[in-house]
Every structure is written in structure tokens, then in C-alpha cells.
Image (cartoon, rainbow, N blue to C red):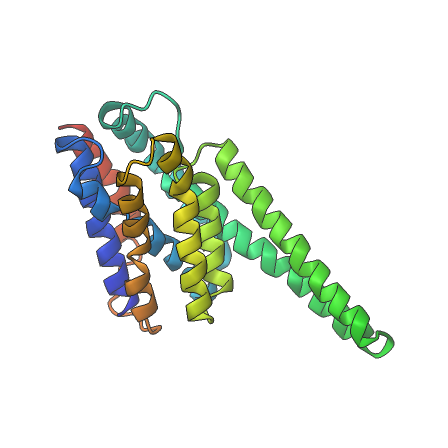
Length: 245
């Protein structure tokens, strides 16, 4: 599975999801298929962070298209999702997810510099303590950014940022990543499942959200054809087209 294949799967399933809202309403088969898209986009952010040649441009690109996409997203959501509240589109979530990764690494890299400067004067216990502290501080920062996403009412909010971050920190531990992602999928839907009187549709949504782990764990680091701007252009364009129906 290449990065190109992952992106195509995410684009197609995202379109099916939004198509379903327009022509079939909520909780259609299309919406179940659509749960596949976001986790793949989240995983691609973690990949992009590691492989981008210019992180500033990556941030800028996400930020610009978040702004460009907001009006099409608002129009689509207001008309076809019946949403009267201002929700920020998924690019804002992905931007904050990328920021959480960057700040987590920045905090831990600061510790590495300190360890290099004072390694001769520090006991193993102090080094271990500093390592643990830096990890805890980094995770707290990630949680704060996720909370900001929730306050800003971004698409997928708190949960979305955590998924981006989880894919990054656990990418090399495939089994642990799979277990953690499964737990996040259950956590996302357990409250509405209970509140709805144990409506099984939420369990189906949880399972469908977990389904893309099959594609993600099949990815072996190969890029395939480059389609850098396809997602960025396709996202606002398809929302605008569907809004017109």
C-alpha cells in the first residue's frame, strides 16, 4: 500500500460520505463508508511531518486551505447537515494535529540538548526523571491543543487531534498503535451509544472508523505518484459542488 493509494481511498470515501448526506440523509450506508476517510488523513499528517522538506510551508499550506475551505464547508454543513453552529473544517483539525506533533517533539528535543550539555554531571536517575517529565509536559501540551480544537469546534475536535498525535508516536509499534486506535474509536462513540439508548448504529460507526487501520498497517513507506495538491483542491471544490444540489 502506497501513500498515493491511501490518499485515493481517503478522497473516495470522503466523497461518498458527503454524497450520502446530500442524497440519503444521516446514518446511511454512505456515512458508514465515509468513516474511513479521516483516520487516513490523520495518518498522512504524521507521515507528512516526518517527510516534508519544509515544515513551515506545510503549516502554511494547511492554514491557507483551511481558510479557503471554510465558506464551502459552512455552506455545505448548513444546507445538508442541518448545522446552524459554526464548525471549522477538517483542515483546521489537521493543522492543530500537526502543531501538536511539532510541539511535542520540540519539548523533547530541548531535553536532549540539556542531556548532551550536562550528561557528565547527571546521574542515570536524573536523566530518566527528566525524560519522563519531558514526555509528560509534551503530552499535556498535546491535550491542551486538542482542547483548543474542541473549543474552536473544529471537525473531529479533541478526538481528531489525538488521532493525529497517536499515529505519530506509535507508528513504529504497529500492534500498540492498532490497540490505541481501537480504544479511541470506542471512546468516540461510547457516549452517544449510551445516550441513544444503546443504538447499535454507533457501534457500526465505531467499527467503520476503525476499519482504515487495515489500510494504514498495509502501508510500507512507499510514496507512489505525487498528488500533493489534489486533496487541498478537491476538498473545497467537492463541497461547493455538492452544496449546489
